Structure formats: C-alpha cells, structure tokens
Length: 256
Image 1: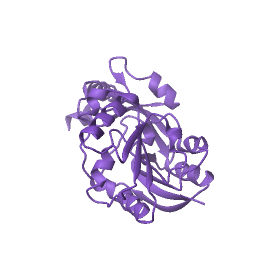
Image 2 (image 1 turned 45 degrees about the vertical axis):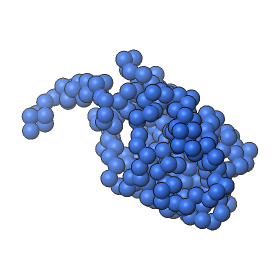
Image 3 (image 1 turned 180 degrees about the vertical axis):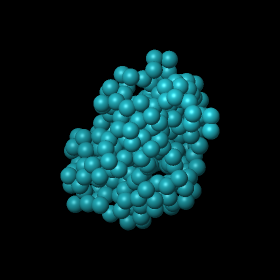
C-alpha cells in the first residue's frame, strides 16, 4: 500500500538500485531506440554480456522446465523423422542437449552443435569432455556454421543477439530444413529494446514484435507448422509504456 503512494520518481530510483544490485532475479530496465543503443546505455558498474567462463559453470541447471515441452515435442519429431543434425543457437554449455537426452532417443549419428560466446564455449567444451559427450556435442562461436544443418534451434537466445533471425538465415549458404524457436521474448504490438540483468552482468535485450518475428521466417522461405506461448515465465519492463505486455513464445517453421 505504501509503495502505491510514493511518487513515480522515487519508485523508479528504488527499482534502479534493485536492478544494479541484482544477483539472482531476471530483471529488465529502460527502453532504447536500438539494440546498440541499449548496449551503450548499460550501467558502467556491471559487466556486459554472457561471455564469462566461470559464471557459465553455475548459471543454469541441466533440467527440463515446463516451458521446454513445446520445443521438445518438435525436436523429438524432427529426430524421429530422420533429422540428425541440430544447431543450437545460444545453447550455452549444451544445457538442452543434456536435459533432453533423458527424454528423447538421440540417434547414434546425432550431431549437436552449440553456438555461443567464447567464454561459455570454453566451459562447454570442458564439460563435454568430463561427461564423455564429445562424440555428439560440439561447439562454435560462428552462427554461419549453421549452414546445412537439419534443425536450427534457439531457446531463450534470440533476444540477446544483435543479429535478427532473418539476417542469420540470409547469411547461410544452405538454410536449415527446420527452425524451432522457444522462450523468445515478444510483444503483441511493437519491438522494445531494453536491458536485462542476469546477476553477474547486464545484457542488451530485444523484445520483438511477435507478428514481425513470424513474418521474418515466412519471408525467409519457411512455412509455419506450429506456434505457442510459453505461459508462466514472467517478463516485465517496469516504467516503460507497454512494458507489462511482453511474453515468451515459440514456433516451428519448415523450409518450403
């Protein structure tokens, strides 16, 4: 009740302090004209981005969350239909490879490649050796290596990339047969560029207009198989117009 009586400037200042001091929550702050402007507007007291090998060791657990299941369904269908190569864009240390192998029958000849930043890749390679997963799991820092893969999979990563999905696809000499997106930050009315606190760092963050995202995939030569909303995973940008409307969503598109 007391907070509702405080002036907006006081509440914003209190939230900014919370954002800067954050260690464990998934928080958002501000609105910017572009992805680059958001990066430039990041507070100097925090590191920028995920490129931290030490933090990568403890940041995520290798478990299946309730919001993973739509993408897990389509990935399982893909493997059952004979697709044997997965390019995991922004896949961290291979968290979904490890999580999903308990629930999906991976073919012996599966090739699963994670694309991420160098610090994260370093940790991912070390873990793959420890877990004896190197026969199937590989790593790269170049998204152009996705050329020729059966499935391009991106779970919770597109919003952190300066390059949009249409530009990524356009850069590939051979397009993936299938694209599966999950927990992608979207907005029903427009695109918002903001900052996301992940505890040890702050990241520029794109909350893309939902329909524009699907239109990009269609224009790139893909047809929609499915689309869904990842209910129960919160996202809000306080003190920004329309900041209470973003949500997470996913989709499956096949190449024509």
